[in-house]
Image 1 (cartoon, rainbow, N blue to C red):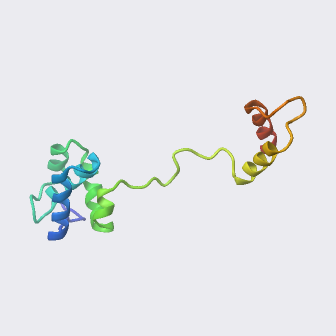
Image 2 (cartoon, one colour; image 1 turned 90 degrees about the horizontal axis):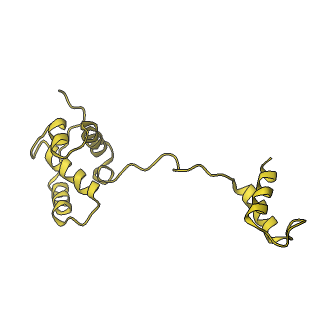
Image 3 (cartoon, helix red, strand yellow; image 1 turned 180 degrees about the vertical axis):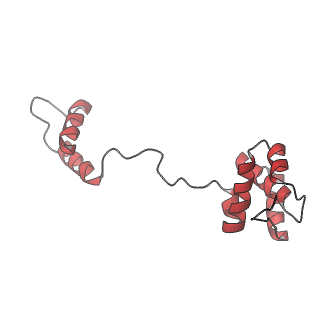
Length: 130
């Protein structure tokens, strides 16, 4: 099968990856990525994606994605995980609502309450957002 992205590591890159693997002082996924890159290098072992995926217990798309990231973005990008495009959780309130809530909280307690409680604050947040 024809490969669009061919991994050719320089001697310096190969040494960096070998140091990372031999010390073992990195996250497990980084060490796994380094091992994969060392073995799919055409100047090294020259493994196929399927061979590397089998040897390192991952999907062959993982190997193909590593190959592509190394060629397009460099060794640091290939070793690290891709940053998430979206935050893990959407924000509940924006800055304007947060400012109003802080202003309310710093002011007098609502009628019928001796002090601010989580329940009373929640009631006012609902009214602010509407």
